[in-house]
Length: 326
Length: 243
Image 1 (cartoon, chains in turn purple, green):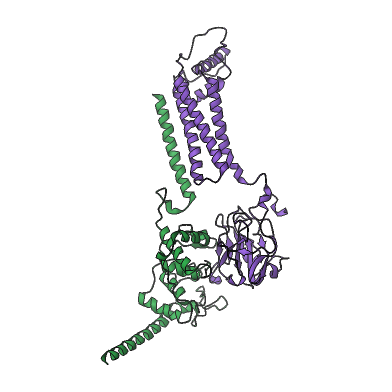
Image 2 (cartoon, each protein chain N blue to C red; image 1 turned 180 degrees about the horizontal axis):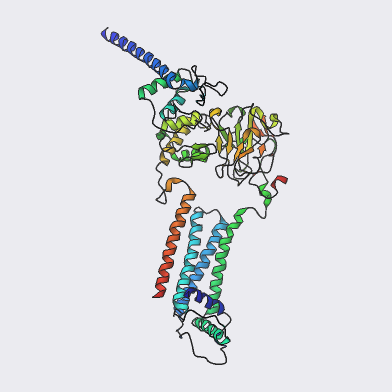
């Protein structure tokens, strides 16, 4: 309760300077207490430190390539909160009055009573000598902390350059390489095994770069209309974007039954929310929250090496509003 | 002359023993395996219903799977399997060492790769981590705790021996994909196995592994502990102010 009143006192006390007192001098309700410049200094210092820590969070977040990024972010935010809490604690102890005032307050029905409450609030604030400075410091700390808390929203997606979501390095003729930079060869792709491929001469980190490549039994192959098996599944080898169409995780699981009659059918599975895709039917969704098939990449065989035969069959990466119309 | 006779006798005895073991393996095979894998080891598929009523007998061909697969399935207790439509679970091996050898030799006599030799000490844990994250961690979790994939359970690697890990990588049991020597070389497999053995007892930075299940239990613990700590602090401040 006292905390609430202190906060109320701070809020309502603004703009009411004791230099412009009411015309009539009234007897005090809140006993006069000496100002505490030391306490105020401490509060100021702590608020400034909180601002600096919150600012550090924003800075670390924006730089985005420090070695211990996560730990630094946690440290900065934690310190900001700790300083703010300390400032509040010191303020409650030394800067705002801590005397019990008569409680509970009745509903202020009469103007006299209302004036009395106002007077209490006003007199409570009198103990502060540098009210304006304290207010600016508290506001600054609060705003910086607020910005720090909102800053990670920037990670939700490229708001300014949404093209990054659609761009892929796959063009006709780009060779498929494994993670150690050796080209993937058609004859090396075995059934019941799965392979991750990246485009030659392109960053592995791009959303559209990684592929999952598997060989499907030719008798099971049932690609959507318009996808010629010669072009999209040479010798039963199919390639899909490795990024799940649900939330953008890596489709890192390949369910490859050793003996199909007694277990589940072959499928590509995303470990995040278990979206399950059928590699034999053009990446159709078998199970899970994904709303559209995995984008497929047409393939060409050039002297045994696998190359892209064009772009993906659909937009890569997680789904968003209107993604099917692209 | 006497030594030669002794050697000859020993060889004959060994030959007799191995012939006896092969017969033993055949007998064991027909008593426990042949119903699902077929009397000629060619397997039983859905069209050829062998069992009576609900006792459906189904099983893959064992020709060409070699000692590698037989050793893996028998030593992990995966086989014999009571109901062929269920996922095999790890239990104690159901055969004595001698019977197990006899069965493995019998299956191996139909061709196929031998038990892979793995030397974890020759591997590098760091390289193993890289390989494990790329090929295995999607299903088995980064420290081999296991998990699920739609339609089946992913076993934990807690009790797998070095040889069994190597066998599983090459065989691809149940719905696990298999990895050829071209994809994971024997040298790389040494590192991979070394990492799996290491990951059973990793040096946890925080001191408490929480089952190594990842961020969800860690988050829950943080919220519980941090929430309790905050309550205590708030309480202490309140008490301090009252005085």
